[in-house]
Structures are given as structure tokens and as C-alpha cells.
Length: 140
Image (cartoon, rainbow, N blue to C red; front, side, top):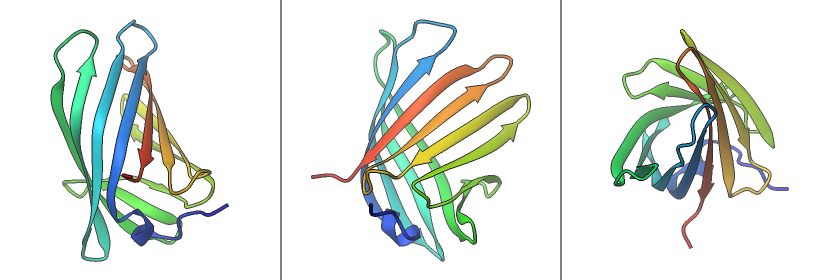
């Protein structure tokens, strides 16, 4: 089994498909787009963009950005304003947590099918209760 060795393995364009499952409501939600990881300094700028569909509402443009940096444990991620987000290892599977009181964000990364990989988020809090599965693949 091949696994990513470092930041350079993520550089470039990834197709991104995301399903969001809200535990407390029947609202199908999906995101389809791409993630571009571009070198900046010793890290990568992670920028995703695409179309988010919530239920029967018209699709809307959605974007987000993070900074990925090398870390002794693997890869450290930061919000685009520089605040720490979480760190994950480059093992076959890796888990991390981000506490954003009153909510908790738990992520499980899986690299079993590298270069395809997934990030599964479980988000809980007083007003949040959902699972979000993001699947990343290289364009053909």
C-alpha cells in the first residue's frame, strides 16, 4: 500500500465530492468541486471551490481556504487567518479533533486507496449534529 510521504504528495488539483448527513433533519446536502493545493513558503495553500446544494434550494458557490504546514506529527492545518485548526498524521488512517466551543469537530483521514483519500468529519454541539464525508481524487 502506498501512502503520502509529505506535503509535496498533496500538491496540485484534486476533484472533491462531499456528502453532508444532518442527523436531526432530512436535508440532503452535497458539495462538488475541486481542491487546489499550491506551494507557499514551506507549506501549501489549500483552496477549495465548487457548488453546494442543500435540499431543493438552487446550488450556491462555496469556497474555503486553509494553510497546510509540515509538522513532526505529519501535517498541521491552520485557518486562512493563521489560527491553528488541527494536525494529522500520514498513516493509513489518522484522527484529529478541533474544539470550537460549544461545538466539537472530529475528523478521520483515510489514505488506504492513495492517491485517493477521504476526510470524514463528525460535528456535534448544541445546534450542530452532522457527518460530512469528503472524497478526494486526482483528475483523469
